[in-house]
Length: 165
Image (cartoon, rainbow, N blue to C red):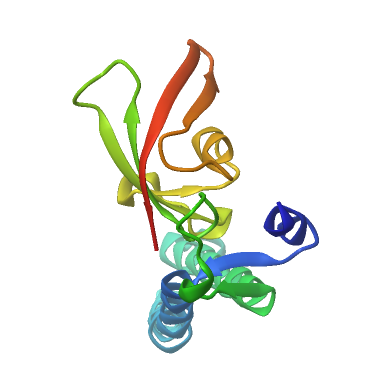
């Protein structure tokens, strides 16, 4: 649970892939998106009166979104602690673990998830946060142990089938 404490102190826990993805997004925003928005603003200004210029308003709003996202990513990267893949344990579930689980009582419902920090969680890509209900239930467990997830509809139980890096 040391990692949980670190995240609470302001650290952003990332895998190397998550750090690289954020760095790539930041580079794209700074080099491409900023230029595109600046060009949109420049063109919108040529339309005249800025008080009733929807193109200008849209471009200003887009500029604010881009700058906000740049600031957000820079902050995350400045606070990032990258998990070394060689330090990911395979004996018990931790941040960085690739966990295969099976819903107890359902022979065909198997799932594989990478346990990550909240900043890079993406359930659609099988990456869940250790702070999520399923992630929290899995943390620290070993192969063949049962994770109990408290859900609004009741408890859901998952058996851990494997833990990999």
